[in-house]
Image 1 (cartoon, helix red, strand yellow):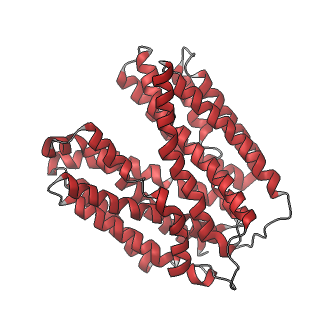
Image 2 (spheres, rainbow, N blue to C red):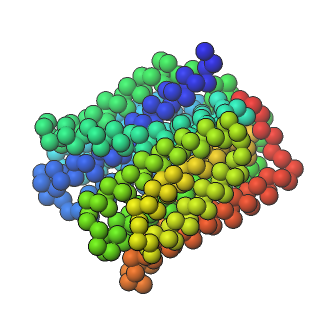
Image 3 (cartoon, one colour):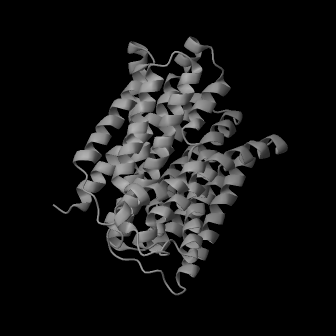
Length: 392
């Protein structure tokens, strides 16, 4: 069997464990509040803490992979996730939970950066869009598995079972990477070229534009799922109805990510997928505050939003040489975490300032349309004397 696909399978399972762990705290938050007397603000801080190390660790994470080896650092990241889950699972106070969550989040950041680079190594020049679509879908699948299992387990066995289960899945993933995953020729130190052969200025510019696209995409998505319920409940819809339609839209996005990857792999037309998906999503966001049928708009969003995801995640592969992928992916993911952390608060501030529940969605629509401008800029700069992209 072609070694690429078993490698992708192992890396996908490992990333599922990240989504599984990320979602675990939200599901047991009522039990944590009861046992430790913490506030909702404390719960929100714990949830956000998982992603916050990315602002500081994403760029160094790529360099660490180059220095010590991608596979070795991924095993270290999964060990951090395992340790973090154990610490939370046996915590007796809020401070200990903070420490465990921070350890888990640091591991998750390293995992995200390094494994995306590893998938790129295996698939650059061959099925990269399809592979990235499969790989990126692993995170929401992990969230879905957590939603299906951890809440019920916590009610029966206590809240401690949820973080302990995430530690167990991270440990299984660690063993798979350690004993099943085969290192790529571009792994870590073998990537290091002659002295001075680091990442080039043009590569930095291109990968930062690609990273800004991905960061804005995720920030706009967070705004959409965070503020659409507020808008629709204010419009008179029941909370349960709103939850159903927003949830359905989210699962349709997972489906459309895979459809986009298959279409791009089989028929090409990556640029058309990008423009159609982004323009359609932005237009629906503008329509959502004024429509009498928000459920229809949410379904259309679900069918369109995921189409360009594989295309976006393949952009770094077209900008970076094999020896600069580790560092370049660090830059790429720094923008992701900046978008996650920085854009939703601005949307909330705009709603407070305007008093309109539509303001955050209009802001998100503007961000989405700006993605198209960044994509055109990326493609234009790409047409200049090109960075050589070598098949993996």
